[in-house]
Image (tube, rainbow, N blue to C red):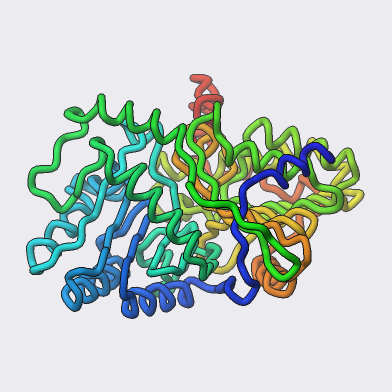
Length: 446
């Protein structure tokens, strides 16, 4: 454990004053902050998300970006989204050009266009996507796991709950912008989706392979700073693939370093083996482990039993089966109150929270789902906070209280619904998956 803590202490760091870090507590506050920042930008706006949707909230963001660009044509504005996700419709919807059609319309209707770059992490979406996060406006980093559409920005009645953090730090902003420009946009595999001459995926297959290889070796570049008792240490991390992935290693090291407490948030319960192993070891050490996971009805893909069932609707049930098995295997730890599993559910809203707190000293802010897909396939990033002088305690405790507000404590695995009680359509799908022995493969892709 001491060795693990030493490894964490060897990470390069940036020093941030506590007053230059803030936490937002709602999707509406996040949207308001993002729009305010875009409107006040004077030098640069770099937005990176899985997708920027063609809906009311997405168009509001596009309107704000184009208003800023027309006001000041020298303003450096760049948007990055996943290449594949941008060029298809929603799952289950009719075939379409996807969000890329909106990007082209905006570019064609304005004098000064805003490029929207498609980032192809893999040749096919199922095998890897852009899951990097971060919105940089001037010298401010607005970090969230949220993408940009109606539900993530609480445009209408429903919202998708995420985490929202603000860092006012020029070196951090410079490092993240430099990564986006040099490691992503400058590569031949990356193309502007607003362009009429953008290539087909099959035309850039070789470039995509080289791009993925380069991303797997990439890191955020910055000059490490000394951190005194009046500042907090922060480290931006990036990871892709399973071999040299510094982000994956840091996550397992954090859990291995825990002496008193591990607090994990994930929307999809499907831990990678290395994480599951470290959680078991932490419980054996007597560490208090809390896991906050979305109820199946708060999953992005949940389909109400009253609606027509589609294959994708089986995903929440597969995650719940994982959770029930885990809870059953750790029933003794639940009974001794060393393990707390809490299910988040709030009306018809959904849950998209990720991250970790360790011993009130370390906090990981990330879009990483802490699952096999994040571990091996997607391009992920995070910001690690090391708060050894407890300067952020009040802000971080307030965030945890907010997260726990709509959760229910699981006191026994029997509280988690079993397969026999699922809707018949979900049961049929699960039986089929088991019959063709596809459950092992699905665990790696979900």
